[in-house]
Length: 554
Image (cartoon, rainbow, N blue to C red; front, side):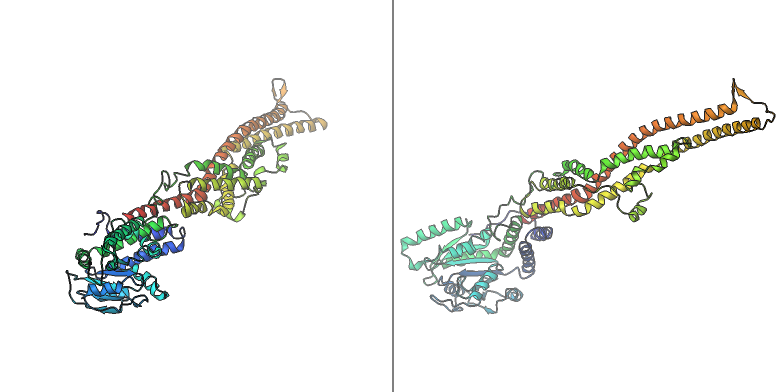
């Protein structure tokens, strides 16, 4: 009966690398014991494959009284192990080696001190290392721990059961069922069949097959044997010889270990080594694990909430009013515009526009935009939670929790980051249009004309008061030029001021719309950097994790 071979796929080296990659990606996301177990499996596999691959380590494991030691002696052709009836007699594992040259480092790694070179019997066992393990149900804890340790290390597991306890739940639930994924490196022997009536042997073997099938061990070879009479030993020797000759048990065992560890990473709730771990749990569902795919539509609600909390409507209104205020100061009629200086600048009241570079902004500190209200804070928290929930909707367990946590990971920095974005983006709101300067110079020119006309009239009034002869007085039509300059300058100044106000009103609306757009864009970038990008990063990490799991399982 030949070993069931796996389909050709990735090499064991690549699968081990994939398992380690999956464990690294799962660090901090999955339970520490699950991650450490995967690392231990990869490390153990790396050590085993570096040791002798020309030897196959097969272990006889079973309960007290199952006849392991008797079977061990029968296969070795020598009385190597002490045989007991009811009390455990094997306290430490011992090995029988056929052609054991070069097996020393492997046995040292297995920590097997007792080593025997048995007589050559039966088929060619060259390269076989047969271990006799302590009883898995021993009353001594050290015996049970030794069994558990070696069950994880050996290449081929030979479970020795007896007619009385072959259905014992202890062996099925603790060992056989959890090792269902290791069916390719498992053999079951029903020993002591000589104690059964001939017609009962078949029934027991069929019942054992049913139990093994229920354990997920369908196809595992079952051999009925008797160490006392020799029944079935030839079949067992042939089976062991075939496994040894193939030199594949060690790689099949490591392959099963990697698959089991990958399954456990994929579904930490399942027991290690269990084939019951659903392979679909780590596979990406539609839309899951695609960076940005699940959160693409949530940027707008998040930006809306952050904008409201940051007081963007207030800032936009201040930009509009501040633009008009500064336009009046810059382009108003010099006779009256000084009054405007006593009115506060809406932007300066918010501490926006008080510095011209981002470096200066850092030294000025926060803006004076009112802090977000409790309702606005709740809206931001809800938007952040919605991002996390939407991104995690196609994930389960620890990964879903990790995505939700990623959405909140930098929430504490949002307030300052948004405030900096508002202050930095709003710096352009205080930039003076060039036409203001032109109009301001024109206003001063008109004002100078008006003053000149006033002074001219003043001189004329003075000369008339002093009864001095009047100089020739030019006129524009019937109106003297001094009067034209005074009245025309005043009228022109007021008219220019009114027209400038109309232009400032329209410009204020345009600037407010532009600033609102720029603020929204800046806040959207903050939301992306502090909320969406961590979520996308976590989703990308999960995608790489599922890809590594898939490669490790292949």
